[in-house]
Length: 149
Image (tube, rainbow, N blue to C red; front, side):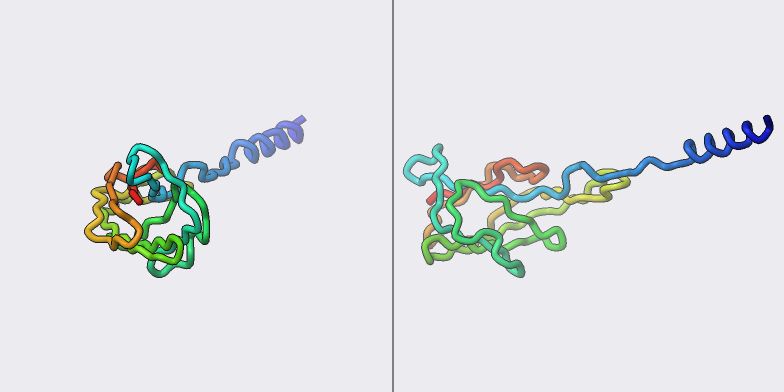
């Protein structure tokens, strides 16, 4: 009888001492959302044709795509990211500055970055007519920058 109680005690101890697996299911650092609008009708999204996008130090993020919005990563190691947007062999460059804010997500996910105080200190205007910041804080993947062309 003592053997059964001992066996049950050991099995009970094994099951109760196991640690639940901790998986990261929370969102990671959000991307910047850039949407393209018709300059003649600034409330209407406009689909690009043959758009190629890359950031300094990165390979092309988009190559010859037809889209009205793009998601691009922000460099969490710097307070500035420079994007190159080429449309029909005409290239523009947009410089975006921001303040990084480290946010604790969970034990399994660790930290992520949010970005605040978005600014566009300069950009070229070869095919881009105007840029507007619609949301100065990047905490989620909603529209942040509006490009009129």
